[in-house]
Amino acid sequence: MSRFRMYPTTVQQAALLLQCSHARFVWNLALEQWSMWRRDKAFTPGFAEKGRQLTEARAEFEWLRAGSQTVQQQALRDFDHAVRSFFKGTHGRPTWRKAGCHEGFRIVGPQASRVVKQNRKWAAVNVPKVGWVRFRTSRSVPHAKSYRVTRSRDGRWHIAFAVIPPPLRAPGTGGVVGVDRGITVSAALSTGELLICPRLSDRESERLKQLQRRLCRCRRGSNRQKRYKSAIAKLYTRARDRRKDWVEKTSTDIERPGQYLPNRRRAKAGLNRAILASGWGDLVKRLEDKAAGRVEKVNPAYTSQTCSVCGHRAPENRKSQAVFRCAACKHQSNADVNAAMNIAAGRAVSARRETRVPVSLKREPQLAASR
Image (cartoon, rainbow, N blue to C red; front, side, top):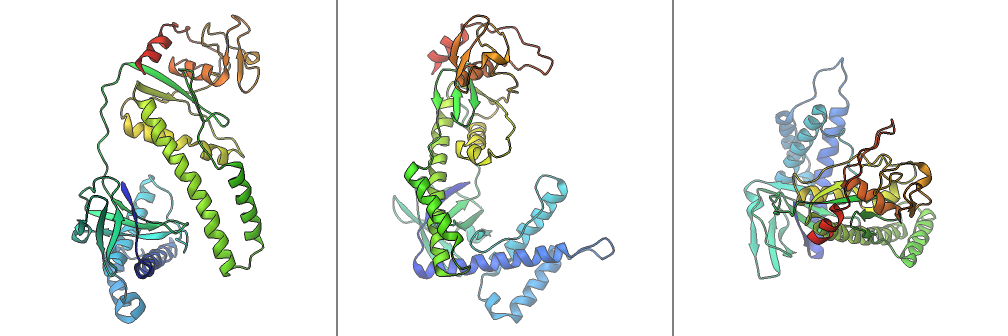
């Protein structure tokens, strides 16, 4: 997806929100119709029958007829695709779309190609029933057969063109970089680097807590509640933008040596927020996109208890969260860096306490030189 920031006018924002509400209404109506099916009843209508029902509904209700038929039909197609993906087992069950949370619609077909470049920084897209809406061209606009217009919770509009860029086939250096993902240290590299994903500052975190407390005391549906929700959404968006920027830059730096071997730690209860803030999933996804075919996932079992020098493994080797001191050879280093070196060496140990042969220390200087 190639996503760009849109800057609609006040009138255009109202028209875009109306299109979003129509798409959400059609989706939820199709979901309700599909959810009513039981084994003792006939099959629910297919896409063709739903299309005929939509035509009849547009002829009867003026508020629905005021929207774009392309947007509403595409919502039915998207729901039909979601149902097929659910039965295939590739995606979860289709869920309800809620106002304020799921604001968006998709345009497919010849209308998706109505994009003009105005100058070096700006372009415009002709959205049905809305008109020409400007968006900022931070990079070249791809030629796509469909695009999706969305509104985030903080009120920002975006347009995403359905184009998957080919992965960059970097030549690589033959080096291997091990990455140990954690909570305190987001990513520890086998080269000795400790990378921390930026988060909200202490002042911003305190501000977020205050807003959340005030939101709990607001009357539901009031303007005050909407104002606090918007302020909270802006803080969350700020944290997400920082995390995304860090993931993009870090994945590019890690991809250069050649091969990346992330660990796969199971998320513990109560750590979901910390894991999200560390950007574990985003980092792996972007690395797989940028270094296609050169990413290998290694089981991290006991890597934090195994010495990367002599291969001795014992629980007492891990002195604390940050300190590793081998009881056999007295090697001492950062615990996360030691685990990353074991991951880079592919030194996965099983539950039977089987430790692989220690890896030569010559690998690390070559790895550092390749960067």
